[in-house]
Length: 92
Length: 261
Image 1 (cartoon, each protein chain N blue to C red):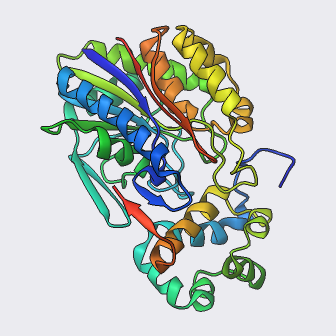
Image 2: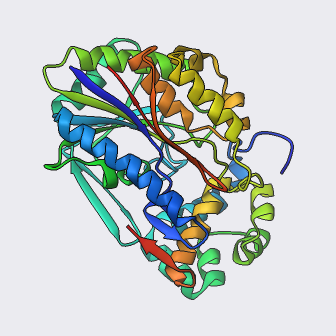
């Protein structure tokens, strides 16, 4: 990801991947299921083997190269970290 | 009538601070938000008309409106432990939809889309007491192709005309920016120089020039969200901005600005 815009038209072939990232970001029930079993939940969302591997590995560059929207990758990751409770957050 | 105009950063790290964020910087942005809240308590608006860029929350790929008006009874959103619901000023929302379409803007409207944090992070810190109604206006900033800055400016000019003709006391607030690149390999390198030049231009009362920016300019500068500010600039014209804060963090140019109207 160097040439081209930071945010590009989401390719149609990446719809399932973007739909899954959107669900992790915005659907609390889906996110909770994903945290318990990422593999099965990503499979349920219709992701192929390569998308699933990139998602479960949290590999941003691979996800974006496969058509994932960078913002969705970013916020899905933040919401997973909030859900898993590993990081410390101060609430205002 | 239009009684005030503001622009506010909305990054969620201002609401929920991870330990990657400088606490003192976050508190300085909160102090600027507090000044906006005091101003709103002085201005006593009947509603805040808020221009926000949805973060693929209300509008996913099932439907991507360029410009939209929330015209339901209320709107709501949640983020972690926070849950917000705001009543909408329906007569103003309807005026914006009906007169906007009449004037050539093919607007989308919604009575049940969820509300994105672009709206409620600034409202969390700036909502006056007692609270006032809101009218959220959506501008597509993250799903290309986005509306051009020129289109946003023209829509803002129309929004300004509609609001000035209303009997209510109304405040315009843009939410977004400044430079940041979430999810990209430039996340840790916001274009602070672009932001500083922009703020100088706004202080000098040259907001109109922002309508000439291109979508490519905004993407390059990490300022896709500036479309919400450009929309507001269409309404306030060349009023010289009062920059209440500019606090660039390692990934985000946090700005809070007021314009005289």
